[in-house]
Amino acid sequence: MSPITVKTFQNVFPVFKNEQETLLNRLLATAVSKQFPRGATLYFEGDPCPGIGFLLSGEIRVFKISASGREITLYEIFPGETCILNASCLLSHQPYPAHAAGTAEGTMLFIPDHLFLQYMAESDAMRTFIFSLFSRRFY
Image 1 (tube, rainbow, N blue to C red):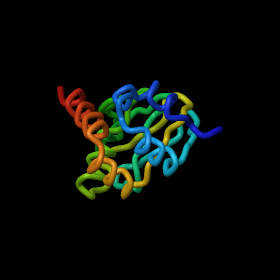
Image 2 (spheres, rainbow, N blue to C red; image 1 turned 180 degrees about the horizontal axis):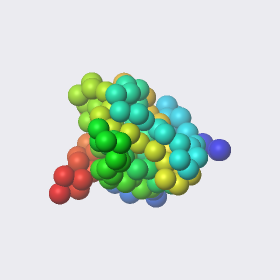
Image 3 (cartoon, one colour; image 1 turned 90 degrees about the vertical axis):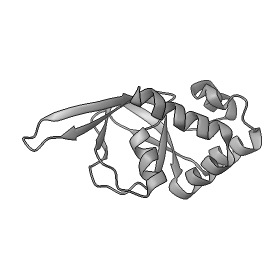
């Protein structure tokens, strides 16, 4: 897969349309493009969070498994979103509290934890993006 351009990133994540191109170029230069097949487990409950994925294509289901083995869907992630539990883990330095699996083949941009925290500190657009996702999920 060829590297993603700033314009393509902004089309999938419109909140970054007014972000400084230098910050976006730095973000895209440090991010790793990762593809996953349908059914792939991306996180198991208790896994560490080494970074965060920004979903470019595909779908991800985030769920818990009850003591009886029943799966309970918490939410789904679609292109142009990221996982709020993943962001929460990075911000609180806690392990991932659920399972995440691809429900459709997809691609994400994976940003290492220390760089995500740096972008959160530097970028109003990143903070707006993450906190608006928190707000929508809680609402």
